[in-house]
Image 1: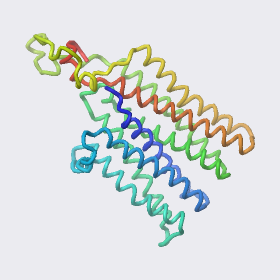
Image 2: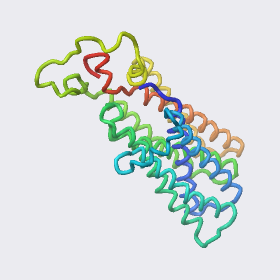
Image 3: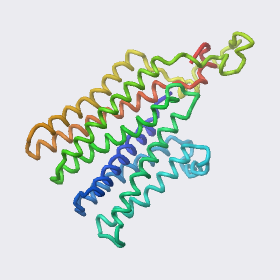
Image 4: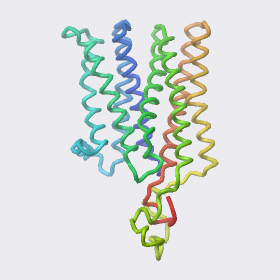
Length: 316
């Protein structure tokens, strides 16, 4: 499918924001000092990324002003569930942020806000992944591994951001670096498995299976539906050359996984001044940001909707 930049920004920015929120919430529950300045900048970064992503998602709509209608189909639509979960998540985050920065208005406000923020953020990211994984008309997305990849990459990029913020404020970062290394290793394994799965997948979408007329024989169009490319072909039938896809996969692995993992190993094994620690964590964040944008672009570019069989014939 044609990669929509607004959706790429949405899934990467909000994913990192929710991942950072989960890391911060767990850290505060396990004894991170409640420094108001750190809370303001760290939680502010998380909320800014999430809000930026959600706003970017509306740019892909024909009429962004009607985005609120997407919340009305919670029982049947993962998109609606995601929207509702995203809105609900702001409530515990507000309780956590106000208590962290300005002091608790009620006993246990910070702990309660942090404890509720974690499942809310996890559910929201999971719903984002399920939006794509639940579409049987797009073979590359209709994989059980898609939603876990979205969640693990959100946690990994969020943990890298958390490590950078901890380093900037002079906190111990080894625990955050260890968590990010484990998540990156898991994310790399899942992503390679995903690529292997879509490469091995049989070409199951044919004109016969799509129309249900297979038992009657071969199905073929009598005439091409259009004499030149149209909107459906541009949006649903986007093609990326296999050699370019292979290069982009390698680039994704190097930037999103290898570089941050090597930096994490160096941070865990070597004693270094804080300035160098900040530089290495910043390098990891920048490398992972480019890597996850590449990964997400490729995720959309390699997906092909079953509707293209009517425009190309044969299989999709």
